[in-house]
Image (cartoon, rainbow over all chains, first blue to last red; front, side, top):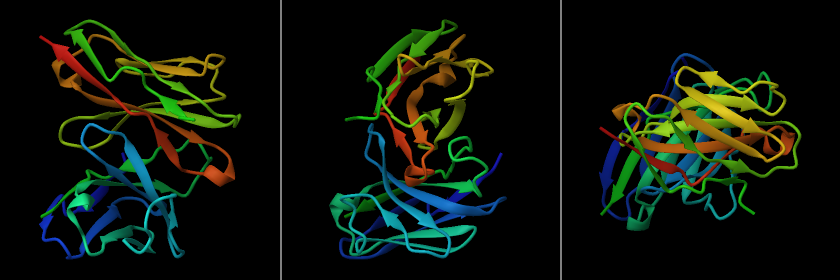
Length: 119
Length: 117
């Protein structure tokens, strides 16, 4: 099956620094990527939808200046947490899908996630 | 209103027995897809099974089957012959087919399944 990678898998940083997380589709072209945030034992909350070559669409309540998303190519999307604070500590998961064959049928492929700890 | 409801925060099952994880959904879109994912402690989301709203038959994938009751808007996951490795968190998700929501999945709160030896 399709593979999505994320880098880094773990990051610990000081408060006030910026952290960049990469999401790559390894064997397919992802026209759309999604960024989720998950707190321990909780559900996945969609943060934004990233389309190649255009601006990301953010969900209500997500600060676009705080969480910068760039989808520069068909295989790479990046999430930058700017001026990170302890409350940004979380598990961030990306997912990708190929050029849609049908709106509901295709499977999303998830990356392994990135655990961010801000001290 | 919550679109995906998983009412069981935690479930226990004896090894080799079957277990049903509940999921109900809410949508007015006639075209939608329902998904189940497994998330072990490592954090990766593992796709298990998919059911389309127009599918006539219930989906099955190995030991996983989806009990799709469209009129009740339920999509319960049945795991047969539970194994210790099935212990994980399980999420039900829905993706609606309209252009406005294209590609966005909504997840339930999850059910933590523990398989007892």
